[in-house]
Length: 120
Image (tube, rainbow, N blue to C red; front, side, top):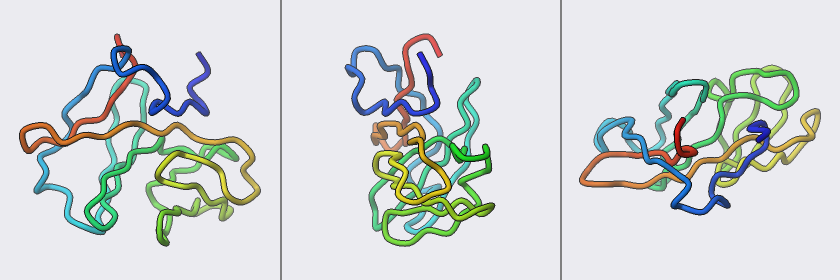
């Protein structure tokens, strides 16, 4: 499976394992958190109390999305300005042309969890 542009929201939930990455109170509104789980580099955003997780890699040049500016539900790559929707990883502006991975996020007993493919 090419993980470059996979939207893990579209994968059957039974094919996902949820990994705890932080407690709910560790990620305040407007904050972001970078995590590395196995080969997955992920940035988690808290935007107006909603949690979103996307791959921390610009599909244009592998730049770190986690360092980009956020406006509404868009994050800009700090290198060349490509914009992505944090809700689904969709590319919104060039120079990128390929979506980036998006991961389901849930709160479970006060813990923030990200859904990753089984066996990751």
